[in-house]
Image (tube, rainbow, N blue to C red; front, side, top):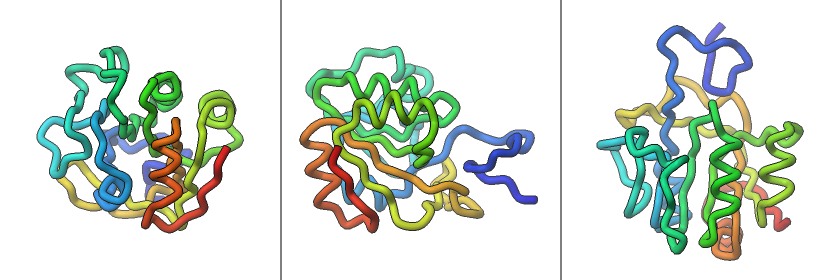
Length: 165
């Protein structure tokens, strides 16, 4: 059985937590000031400023005026969303739409201002920019924190259903 990033199975040996957002998503929602979950030397830019693993965007301070793009490592998604939810300038995160989970209830339902449930399943990209061999294995949602995030999610070219919270 093939395993994907959305699988409930144990990942294959050598599996990665690094999956890039397809560029059409950030192009439709940007520009962004900060991507705290960026790769060094990525195939495309997602924000004007970024932190990568070496600079640890989760523990580094974020410019309070920076509008944030966050595709968090899914091994620790709720800590990233908690930080984004508390960020004064707000931003948008891309996560799986696992609406029944404890983390979704505490960091999304309890704090977000708007959601865009993406139609269909995304195909994330590998660090070299190539597309993954299959789709994500779970539906995705864009989570907006703040008025600017809601405006961008409501007026986008990405197919899906926007919900104001």
